Picture 1 (cartoon, rainbow, N blue to C red):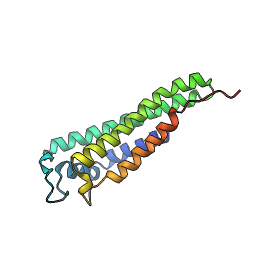
Picture 2 (tube, one colour):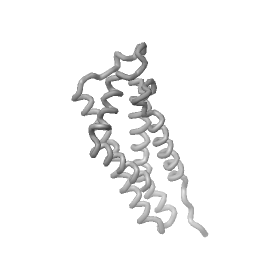
Picture 3 (cartoon, one colour):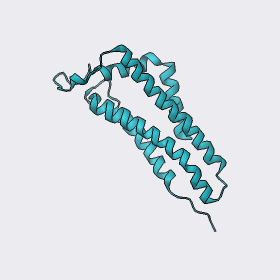
Picture 4 (cartoon, rainbow, N blue to C red):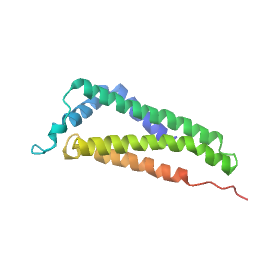
Length: 153
């Protein structure tokens, strides 16, 4: 539920401060702040509607992560006193949701933003360290969650 809370705050920030956060996506897609001599600039997306579509897709993935992590968290909470076998089965929902969050930040931000669009080259619009911190946190929670529970005898 901590990840659900975090993802909810991210979505809230992206929606309530659309312009500031949109500027980030716009610069990353445009590749206008990467090294001037970079030969990957052909990958840039200049179309404003594509910037908005990409940003809305990011918000959608973050919102799905938040919503589904809340559902998974509450499912775990309601099964906390269940036998270990049943509790372990209830983890499937949360595991799937955390995986979505991991993929959003790892694939979306690290792979696409960081590598494809060369975000790591930008001094101003580099979200790679933040994305790494976020997806590693999610990965840590995911690893902890997949550890099987056993009944205390």
